[in-house]
Image (cartoon, rainbow, N blue to C red; front, top):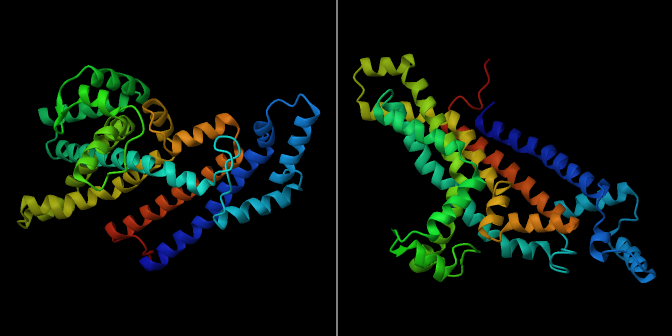
Length: 340
């Protein structure tokens, strides 16, 4: 089986996963204890409220047989008819809400993934190439500390430190920056295309992104160190050294490429913080992105909106898995070929 067929097979296998995830979401929403119509109407303490409740249940299709509701639900989602919000933002389309809240979560998730990748992995590789030295011990201890710090605790401590610090960062002190641009709040992405707007939006999101990616930095540091140690002890490394391969070529072509193979699922799994991990951080830092929107939908009982967002989360997860398979086929030459 060549690589193209392998990748095609993985994409086809994603279809039942997507269907199973949406089915589970439907069961939780429609068969659970919460009634979206009741959340819209509120307390039913009069005949008018009861009449309105019944009317909304009819509009939502809650009186139809369960198999009819399921068919309509699946058809709407797979044709990207994500419906509307009924409680949190009454009458607004879910697609327009995603367009409004999504860029903030994407901006947060982008930096939350890049920070561990460009800090944790290089430190882990550096520690693995300098094993049992003071540099190795320092990097390893740093990874353990990063991994052990709870996100909510780190968020509170970081906000307290930044609010009392006048240390310069990217040309401005954090203390004055917090007062002037409200670092706790939704980042301003309207001027992202300009250098000043990019710097401002980056400064606004970095503390939250650092908190969100802190545990990932520890994981990637430790795993990349372990991967490098395993590779440099392989026989083919000794053979390459014996035939005179330079250290630079040995590390770049043989050690790093092979060490990246076990790191691929770790790196791609960090993208899942876009799905779940951002909810807490968004609430604490007031990012007001998709995580906050989902939190508000669940707490307010806006199940139509919550169900549509769950479908988006599941679709994002499936796409991340496919991207992981693509990276595997590019880096590992053994992928896609079965033993004869």
